[in-house]
Length: 258
Image 1: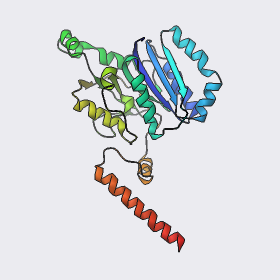
Image 2 (image 1 turned 30 degrees about the vertical axis):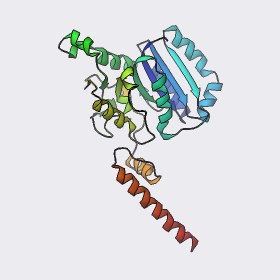
Image 3 (image 1 turned 135 degrees about the horizontal axis):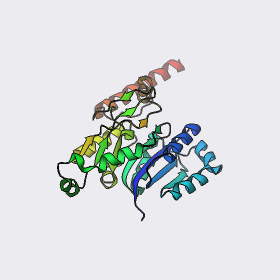
Image 4 (image 1 turned 90 degrees about the horizontal axis):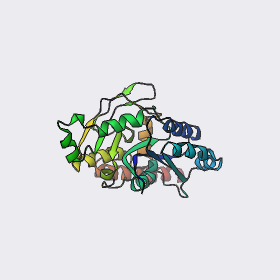
């Protein structure tokens, strides 16, 4: 199997124009040797984009530079923030390192280079031989840019670091438990990697990832109202919330049928 330096994972649903701009930002990278794994989550917009032949020329351009783009549209929608797509891309990854990308975000032309240089740089180890003997870093995390251009200062806490702000050694990532369809799975991944003994640090490189949209408190509250589990809550709180929502629905039904 051909090995690439970096695998980029991109799950798509909706936002057709934003999706194209996101993919174009990958094509503008100043580093080659990557594979881009794109999957539409049974998305009609993504299916329409495939049928236009838009990807044909992109794939040719990528191949000329030693890169590859693989894409398809799922026949069944998985939802849950593209969890099933993320798991499939992790399993299929042929890159030495793995990064995540959302289809409403952008990356600067030096994004892959910045992330790659950070995780492969032995200078932060006292001795290069120690770096090589240890197998190098398992993950590195970075600051990113918010939609208004302000820097998002990441921390190793729930909701304060996300998929987009990490690069992970693929062989280490593939040992982790698959993502579950819960809000906050990016933090769960980071937490599990640390528990598994990951070697990591925070890079001081300038932010190169521009977040297109941050969930508002109202949207997160919406996840709770619709009964989606919130990762990071105690198990009893999710169950209690479910019972409470069920009772409220029962009361509403009684009122309507009077």
